[in-house]
Every structure is written in C-alpha cells, then in structure tokens.
Length: 71
Image (cartoon, rainbow, N blue to C red):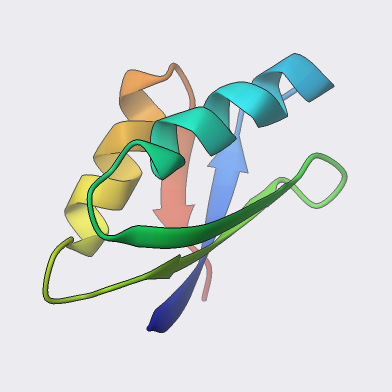
C-alpha cells in the first residue's frame, strides 16, 4: 500500500470532511482515508496498481473541492 498526502482546498466544516472522505473511499483501490479539516489535507492509502494520482485528485474535485499533491 502506498500513502499519499493531498492538499484539499475549500473545506470549511465537518460535512466537507465527510464529503471528501466518501469521495475517496468510493474509488476502487483506496484502502485508507484520513481527512483533516485544520490542516486541509487528506492522507490516502491506496494500491497504485489499481488507482492513479489523477483519479484520486479527480474524485476530490468532482466532490466540489480543489486538490493537489502535497510537496
């Protein structure tokens, strides 16, 4: 399992955290999701043979937020 930290912009409440968590959890190959409102980040554990970085960020963006990998 690989882990990726993604910066998520636009979250303002726990409902946003739940939306991002649900969007990422629904992606095939995602095994673990931890979203933090204070840091504005999502830590995703995933199988890179099943899902790409682009698919992860797309899932967040479809949910209505901006996403980019953390440096």
